[in-house]
Length: 215
Figure 1 (cartoon, rainbow, N blue to C red):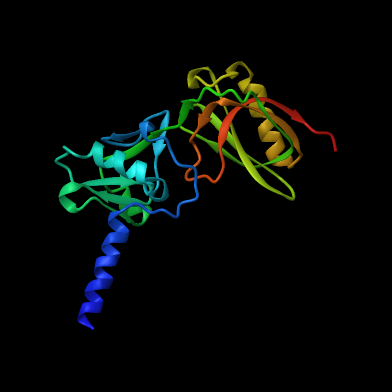
Figure 2 (cartoon, one colour):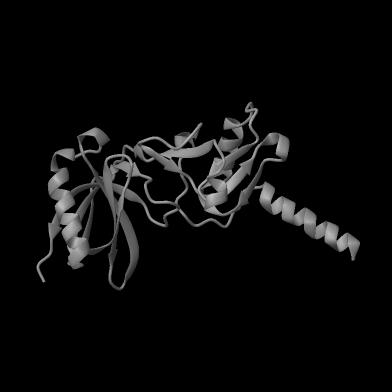
């Protein structure tokens, strides 16, 4: 019985110490991850346990903490224990995780030059809205009977989001569409990718235009 318990303990350690391979959310670009001594500043947000579990992100946070004298670091719903403590990522309660001082943050926008051109999505409803700390408003768009979901963001001039001159008009249209649940047609620009939503299963791009659909 004792060898079995030792084996189970070892397997539990391995599962915590190494990155998970069963993640389905969008993988964050590792170059956007950085370590903050306090709360993530404007233009970034705290990453969560699932996002930190990718191999590329685990490698990045290991590099960021390599020379740190502090051994414990925060993700939204977890804690990372650095080299001297075994490079272990544990999932814990948010209140407990946020008691740590140093946090892993991700920049919430990246320029992603694309040859695809614009992307058009017809007859979509706004399922949720998210106001960030980065002068942006982001929305989740879905279509009845269709599994594909996509995100779109707008921003004011300070946000550096494209088409910011239409921010007020876009904000009004998004809010109205969300409250009324009326369909909209949207055009997204894939040359700017956003990471405001935590561990999303969909990509999020800059909104170029919105048009209400008549019933």
